[in-house]
Image (cartoon, rainbow, N blue to C red):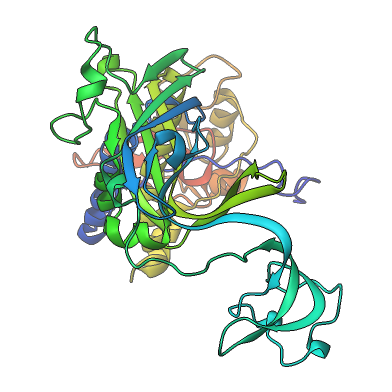
Length: 455
């Protein structure tokens, strides 16, 4: 009989459950199920809090202030306070604190020999200093002359700020007292998804609290006032070494807020890390001299650059992520069954047997009424139905037949029903002969047929 025109496209497959008493596969199945359960309870729910909706992009605001004073002897005795040592004065996410400097005072525009530390400025004769060419990595424009800088070096004459910049760096930081400066960091985060805002400053009515407290991760974690030396040491460095040539330190402020708990438990965590070991830049202050000539004091500043970055996330219970997390985890239980099926069907020694028991093709045949079935029975043997259903229903019931006749005429008439059925077998009492369940074996509509011996 030809198959349907669509082939197997419209076939439907339904699950069939088979109980397999295989201890190894059974143990594997339970272990996989326990692993899936541990993943759901331990990782998804407890550690990752998969039952919460999350906001990982808060709006942040940072304000910084530096307080302190230091005295430096270079270029004359001078007091340096926060206004002199902090760049920019109104700090936000970046703050630079001066710890060391080289001063070149009373510079004026004119001609002077280039510094011998500049390679392009070295010369032996005027021809080495072509007029109008800038000195590479130097301080001015060549005038065409070669001059004696000192007893051992000759350099090109330049037009620029003279005298040229001093390059002698003191061996000790001139502003070593900056280690006792304090840095006030005020940080506010706002999680727009939950309409929740939090500030790292302690809500207190004491006006002197922030003037007397210093941050300590154990004893005073709510004070946003940090001592510079403590921050450098938290980054794994020594202040004296870092202050000499400068450096860059990252200040990371992390907010991890569980909004299922009271808001007071939402507190920031601070961490410090070194980013670079050298940092400096130049700045100058200008003034007019007595002869109305423009002068300047040039400072090459070394110090510590603080890069402040704020990250945060907040979570709150929501039914949607809870359902998604649980559904994903439940899928792993199905994966456990699939893995065990693969082991049975491909790796087990009895794989062929499992294939036959698991996959069975069902042939759907035309249905006949009970009366049509009875007529066919009576053509081969004498009998009558003991139980019947209404006409048109699937044939089912008990039939009392004479065993003196053969079953072959019945097989010849309806081979598609009985071709795979064994001969009738007597029951335990020896009086009743039972035909096996035809529906489960060949897909016919007869459920159970009992043959009783005629008297």
